[in-house]
Length: 99
Image (tube, rainbow, N blue to C red; front, side):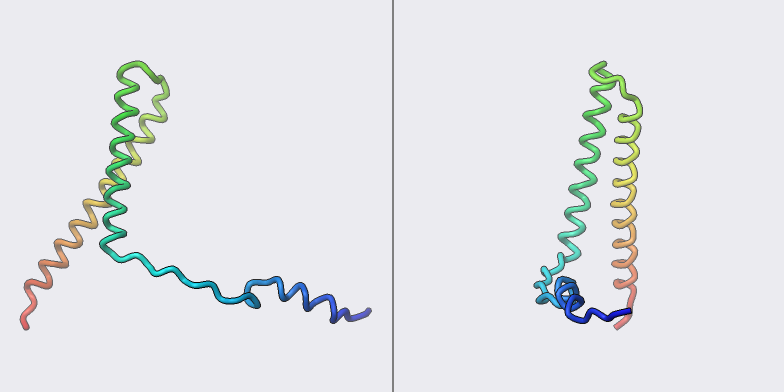
């Protein structure tokens, strides 16, 4: 049994914890994240509508794709509505606070 000290050092230098720290990108604000989420839900709704119209017009016969797009859209919109409801509840709670 022999110990190889010299070969272990280059292998360790290739690992992340020896490299220089990368700059962390500034995090997005809540408003930007909310705006992106609303835009994403809107785009999913538009895509679902387009696929549904294609199915009704007979341009596609893939019912699975239509249903999946519709469910994605419904889930995204439900999420946005729930976030809005929570924001309204939080605002109402703040407005009831006595200073």
